[in-house]
Length: 323
Image (tube, rainbow, N blue to C red; front, top):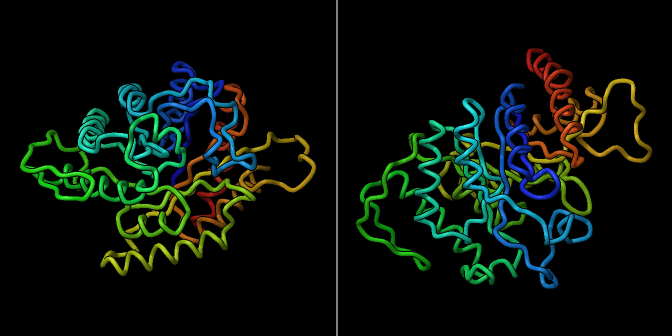
């Protein structure tokens, strides 16, 4: 099993020095990955859009908050870290010119010496699409599929020629290529039927966010969606066994000696033994890479939680893997 941590892109902790402190902690504790998130602008009114990962349908903290640009952050993190893998969770693919994005990502992969992961999504915020003059919101799925195919071609062929409905290019050199042979791995975000098809036919991994209304993406539902992904992979002539399963969710290890909160315990939140047992349930389904979100916007608490996971949970999982 591998473990990553999602760095805050917005909110009280979305400050460059704070993000770098968390990245350094992840590297020193030997987490396997760190991820940044993506929005370019947030509209003052989101009356026509529903945020899919909260019970209110709205982003916590509202729209008038700083939001760090993910590709710029990845460039800096490539210099500030040496070992930990770097990724987007997720980049909204239709927002940016695909050739420019492919070039930027290839450069970051070179700067990081082959440590980059592209977590890719279609987006959900109609008003943001309009503000960016991006392709039509209703076409975002088809545009994303095409852009991802173009990016793969850009990373693996030279010169590049691509004929699509939404983008065409003929006989151009797009260099340098990524440091990773075969290009940058693409982790497909989302849990809709369209996202599962995209993952099976185009992605190297599935990267769902586990926390979504009305509850966590539970193991039984996760397993059913994996079956759909594998079926799409087989239809596309791809090997399902070569596909990586990941899972992103809030995680908190309760300090030793503290009392449990009243009410139902959220998954991946509890004692070290409880968190380890939750992770093992998903690992039994084939999940090999977990990415954790902070549960509170407090730097000291986040750093302490990362350390408790490394010290108290990870050893339990290693012992279990040996049995």
